[in-house]
Image (tube, rainbow, N blue to C red; front, top):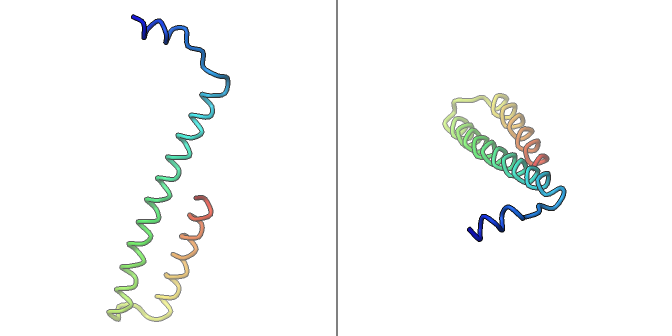
Length: 79
């Protein structure tokens, strides 16, 4: 009963809800960026393997690697 009474009389500071929502949103965005970075790293590793095994021409490899690098940099800019 004391806990319920304390909670009923609790005053939440103005703006707290907005700050909490912003922090939660930020955490979700960071988690999404980390997931995308892991996916890009896996794609880069597969691409490197294809190159090492001779399944890609130098032009294909450089084009794909450049594309993946741009995507990586874009994600880092958001993070």
